[in-house]
Length: 138
Image (cartoon, rainbow, N blue to C red):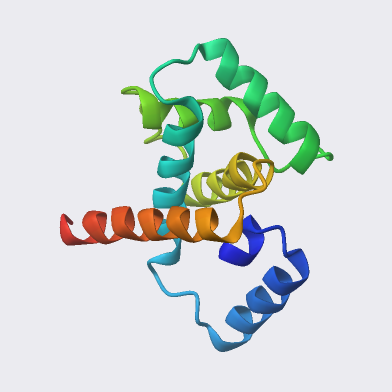
């Protein structure tokens, strides 16, 4: 995940291929994506946002990261962002849609900020901390 968020897509693809070959994804990777998504949304929108801000963000993310228009369902994406900020249910979304959409939006939230290595490391540590707390509270 760090390679993707750093914009090192060649390294990311290499690591994905390696994980695919070895079956090394593990069951907690989607949880780490969700935790990183939660942290990134909270950092980006905080408490001072409007629904129009979220619609504009999703539209920009789709334009940049989903040029075919087939990867991101705008309604699902907006609801996933809102679910971090408000009590909006996403229980009707299947796991594949949630993980794929969170992954793409996470890339949009982080890569456009062009974080330096230290800040990206801090972000990853915070995401891991959140994921660990979620696992402990299962």
